[in-house]
Every structure is written in C-alpha cells, then in structure tokens.
Image (cartoon, rainbow, N blue to C red; front, side, top):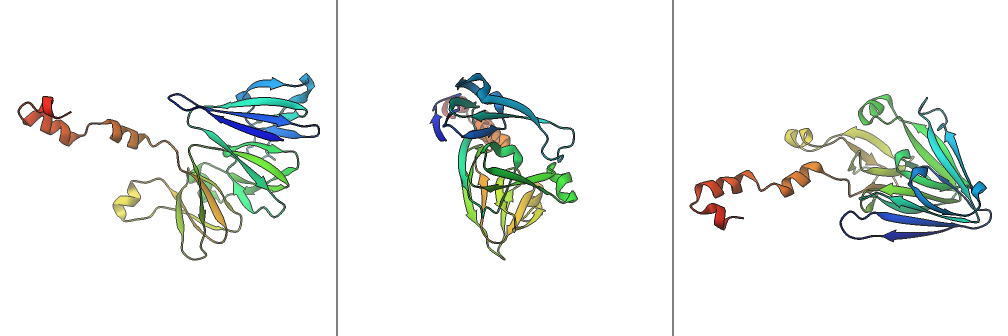
Length: 234
C-alpha cells in the first residue's frame, strides 16, 4: 500500500490523503465519511458496523474495508493531519481510539480498560493496543511530538493532547504547579517509565486566540486617557 499526503496551504486549507492498494492489500478506514473519491471495483469497498469488542456498549462505529487493487482519497478538515506509524510484533503502545484513522489487515486490536477515576475525568473508557506487522494512521491537530520517558522523573502531558504511550508506563491523572497554576490548566497525565510518549502540539486554544485577537485592557485605557490616543495607539 502506498500513501500520498497532499497539504494545501492557505486559509481554510485541509489535507488530502490518497491510498493506492495493490492486490491483497486491505485497509480498514474508521472515518469512511471522509472518503471523497474512489477508483476500483464496486465490491472493493464494504462498510460494516463495528462494535469495539463491547467497550462502547451500544455505540456503533462504521468501518469501511477497502481492498485492492484500488485507489481512494480521503479529505481531512482544516487543522487536522494524518501520520502513518509502522508497527512490528514488539509494539508496546496504547493509542487513543479517537485518533485512529485506519489500520491494515495484519494489525490486530486489543482493548485496555482505564481505571474508574480516570474514566470519570477524561470521559474515556478504553485505550487500544495495536499489534502485528502493518501500519496505522493517526489523526492529529498539528505536529506530533515524541518525548522520552524517565523511570523516576515525570513528564506532564495535557490529557487531551496525548496520542499514545507505552503499556508499561505508570500514569497518574493530575495537575501541577502552585495553587494558581493548578486551577488554570486542564488535567494532565503524569508519566514515568521506559519508552516514548506521543502527543499532538496543535490543539486549538480558544483562550489564546482570544488573547491574541483582543487589543487588551491596558491599550484601551491608554487610548482613552492620552490626548489623540486613538490616533497614535493602534
């Protein structure tokens, strides 16, 4: 299978991902609504309801199974991109299922249940472990960062930004810093262990956008009190 990623730069641009499948290739697409073009035999695509081994109870997910020879293009909305990750038999990473866009036929899924406390806070019940030989596609908002874990020195990662971490890692849902800092941040995963953690660095921060677009109270004050401030202070 060959994957070609095309980025369109500029305002309102997204990303197009074209998959070229050879005879014997099978790709399982977990967001089939994003497929905008398909070339191949009609029977080459088969959609089905997928119950993720009962983890999501009655919530069903539609999966498109596409076999080769064929070619299709998926369109990703503004702010999203896809990264392909190659897997081997010794894979030891747990992934957030929401980030998975596709996986190939020789990749197998296993579920890992989170602790009840973590479920209530993160509203997420399960992580997925992918094993086998093949590849998976991860959806992200912005660049993907990789940080090495340490057995005793923790790294704190925003709970909404984390993509994957080793199954053997030790996690604790927490906040950090002084009292004021801990009151003005999202919950973070405190991670220690061996291996690497993957997280996205482009999630939209609405507060930052407002701060950047707002002229600020000090500027507005100076504009009012200084003679001709509205002319000189832009």
